[in-house]
Image (cartoon, rainbow, N blue to C red; front, side, top):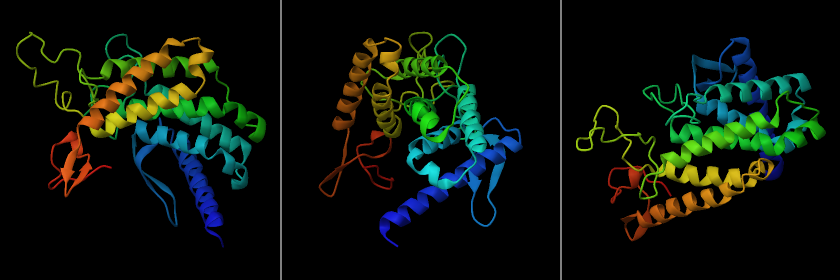
Length: 273
């Protein structure tokens, strides 16, 4: 067996497993997928608390594996139900309330302490919705999977999520997990009860936003909604984030690396490259 065949077999196995997990979540009447899943002799869900990020990851997997789905021999109705379930539950994680948090997506079980939408959860949701948007025509033509949802629903959710990400960028160009509207409510003293982590640049969130905005630019949503201005807005955010990342490396044994929270040293820390 060639490496190509082994890779294809592994991808097909992963897609089948993912669809089975979605099916189990539907049977349990869950509002998405949990953060932890079991695979092996008996596939099962671990816990009943929904993780918005896991639900987004599942949709991205199915959309990016579209060229392998036909070889998975999965019933059309089961596939259609899986896509509809994931999209519906992802949209259900989006904050609809007007104000600072509007458009962001909640992480739920992944970060149960989060009382607000987070940058990383929003990035994963927006990229998943963009993945579906770009593949929906191919799903319908090649796999006979028709999702009963207007394009405008996906478009509006993505644009609203982007607006949230624009608001979350910090002055220097980086992104934290969340940026509070008023870090200094009285103009003098930091409100320590609502800013934990908000002012700390996060290397994972910063690079995820760059990927998300690139995905949005290539999705066709800006053209479909005639929001051509968003190309420039995304470019500006990407440029500022890139400049921050480039200027905040840590040196270790002559190498430039990125440490958690853009620390200036990597001692006793896991490194990101």
